[in-house]
Image 1: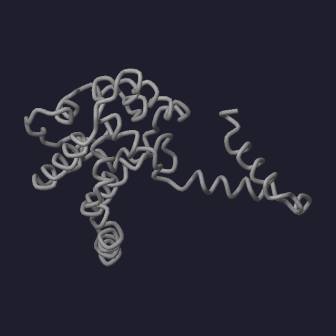
Image 2: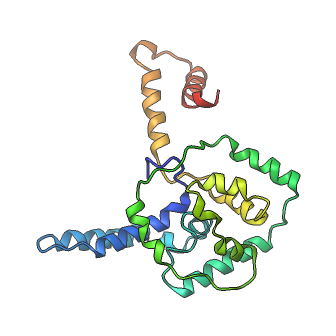
Image 3: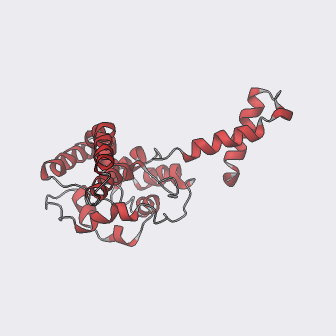
Length: 219
C-alpha cells in the first residue's frame, strides 16, 4: 500500500480481508504452522479494526471497495445504519459551501492509483448487490460511476454535488493516509538536512527547511 498514490484508510479493511482469503488459498505440506501463525496474527492484531466505525465508513466510501468486501449481512446492515445515522446528523452543504470544502483536498496529489494489492482486492468483484432502501448511501452503492475511476479523491470531487452528505463524510474519514511512507521520507530528509556539517541549525530553521523540502511540489 505504500506504493499507492492515494492509500486512504478505506483500503485497510478490504486489504486485511484480502490477506485472510489469500492465506486460506495457500496450499502447503511443510509450512502449515507458518500459515496458521499468520492467520492468528491477522486476527489478533487487526480484529478490532473490523468493528471500528472510522475504518468501516472509510472502506464503504472508497469507490474502489464500497461494500464488496463485506461477507455477512449483519455487518452490511450495521454499516448501513452507521452511515445513515451520520448522514442524518449532517446538513447538506450549499453549492458554495461544498466548493469551499473541496479546496481542502485540492492540494492532494492527483496521480492515478497503481495496481498494487489488486490481487488482494480481486475477491470484491463477486459481491452481492446492496439492499434497495432509499438513501443517498444506497444511490452511491448502486451507481456504476465508481467503476470508471480508481482515484478516490477525484471521484468525490466530481460527485460532491450528487452525494453532498457522503462527501462530507469522505472529507472527514479519508484524510488519514494508510501508510507510513510519508513519515519515513520525512525522517530521511531530516537526516540529510541536519548533517554533521549543519548540526548547529536552529530548531525553527530546521523545521522550516524540512517543511519546504517535504512540500517542494506544492511551493
